[in-house]
Length: 328
View 1 (cartoon, one colour):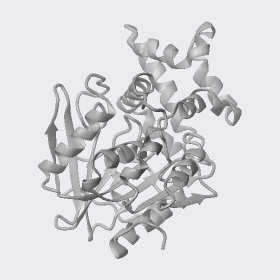
View 2 (tube, one colour; view 1 turned 135 degrees about the vertical axis):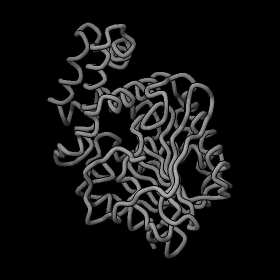
View 3 (tube, one colour; view 1 turned 120 degrees about the vertical axis):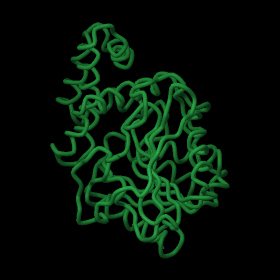
């Protein structure tokens, strides 16, 4: 089964490939998760964790890795992509996702694997590695999101300092009297019995995010979030996580870095990332100086930005050649 297609900067990526195996993982009802494996069945296992929450995997996500060397594992997290049911919120939390990753690792018979994640995928990668460091060989992280209140406040309100016209379009979906709390205003519309209103709100939410992902406008990339199921999953799941998931303490992922300090790690972040501000990457590296941090000066948030794609592919080549993504 093919994932969502998306335009990519092909000069930095490996050729397009198809899975050699795919299947479903039954977890807590009603969730059924889609997974696939690509590349070399006998290769080094590497797990790709997508962003969002709710974005799902795309065909392009297979292409960061040398298919002759790696056994590439991808899955769509609860409630999104080819997993069912789309947009389902029950039983959907970081801990549920961590447990799903461990179930998948056991089902596939993998002892340890490299972990590669960006945006929300970087959050999940860190959380997973801190819970199960014995299963993680290396970490490759892009567009750091630490799930702190300051990051959420920036996404909901701070981005208007840089992209006021896009923020205005986003905010105007909510009645003026409710704009002091955009998250609750959107949540109310997502829960509405008026299906047309709920889908319109989901589209506005999703387009606010995707239109800000690249340094320069990329209509073909933005078209991915125009798919109704994708917009619905991204909007509902992000709002669900923003409302209901709080680490205690707020900087828990930083405070628990000692759990992963010995794992070789590479961090890449676009200097002009306005979805996940660069401060988060700098804060993570400061707490974890053993990691490598590369800032791409001509990039925003997306893994398909040319400079970020180049650095991510270079990191997986270092894993292949030297066993570590860290800059040598």
